[in-house]
Image (cartoon, rainbow, N blue to C red; front, top):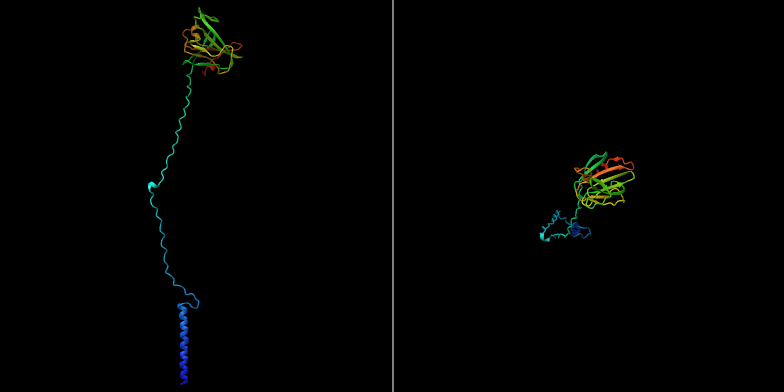
Length: 230
């Protein structure tokens, strides 16, 4: 009987111990009293929602600033320089008279000026045709005066024989003055004939007759090179 009670007591004690152990383990599992963290149940992975694409509202025409054109002053057109007309070329004819060489010049337009072809001293002689003779130094007011305009250099002399003084020829250089190449000598006011027509050949068509002589020998030189640029 005594042994039976001991066995019953041992069984009861074992049951109590087992219950206590099971109770403690349950608390550990359910509550985590023993300080062991209980991992939280993992949430199912959810894919991130796609970010919303920003939408731009269409621009309203009235919202766009319209540039105001600035007023720019229109530049005034500059006056183009008037080109200087090129004078028509002279018609030159070489001929001989009395054993001498001359060049007859036909001038195409009035107002043509003749200039010194080289530097020298101006010599102006005035002739008249009196009773069929050519005279220098005469003074008959009723008859025309014809100028011979020359440029005298140390080695040469060129002489121009133009039309009547005043009505045809205007002398621009004074007798005895020094001139440089390019200085004006005389100008044709009109296209009257040279004194050559009155003195020597009535059919000569020239406005000017030119001769060139060497100084001091008086030998003929060719006048053409001195007139080709005229």
